[in-house]
Length: 441
Image: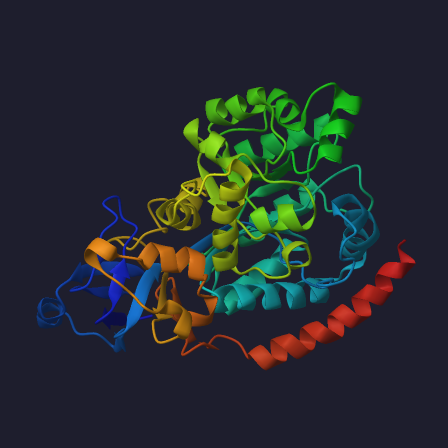
């Protein structure tokens, strides 16, 4: 990976002081940020193999996508069905018939789309994790992977499948790949299954990724089957805690909000997916007031149509302003924290990623200011940098992406794999898969 110097840019550090630096350079040694300081001073001490001129560019930490599915094979299919009908008629039947090659094609496209739009870390719940890990390794993205496991749905993966992936892939790709245990939800999994997921996570000292309280139908089914709401049931089963990311969390009682705070369970807010599927808007400001750590995720392509985190950031703010009739809700700096440092904290990686600081991993994104929607740019008293990052949603400005010290996107071009080949291979698999799914229905 060698030594790299990034100079002449505006650095949005997201460090505890929220410094924005205009007179500093970043020196990267192998996979880590070795020094941040005055360019000439660094050059006196260090010799870079690669110098990146960031003139008229913003330099930000790589975005952390806290709830992500590599699924994209049915993007645009089954629109307007709603969550449950889409799951039962499209998604679960497709998962049941997917091969390893299908998953590799899907994950490759998903990770390529992610890095090209500024995401450097994904918390991905999907299928055939070994193939997801292979795709993540080749694309160059950082990935936390968990299986979409459930024992009450035919064709879903098992916890043993998830365990096999942990044994084979956890810590691979210089530590870029980590394996957690996944639970689809508590209405499609038996209580014994959910408890077993906790046992596996404790055994391997890793995390748990779960969907909770996504729709009103989920709440009603859980109350009918178990006499408890989903988060209450998950808590009784011992599955919550500081090593857990719970996705969605839209329909929460006051008691469930308190459970998240008391157990220190992290929440992944997915505003685009929740609104598109007609599931509502999560009470994120209320959770954050209770001290709950909340990050952001796009969910998957069919539930969102993109995995663009900048779009997710914008909608995360606007949704709460509209819900609470208050333009002051969820300001841009808070949203930027959710997309970076909060996501890193949720994954137990706050000392590794999420901000541009010495000693942290070199996961860095450069945004071109010479696009129409990024102007005008003001500094100082009238600074609008955070506002541009959130409300402009500048995925079109992503120029360079560095993950683990390696350049994976340069001049808007994916450098690690052939994007045309990924796209055409994916198209062939998607066409075949959508037909194969019919045999499962």
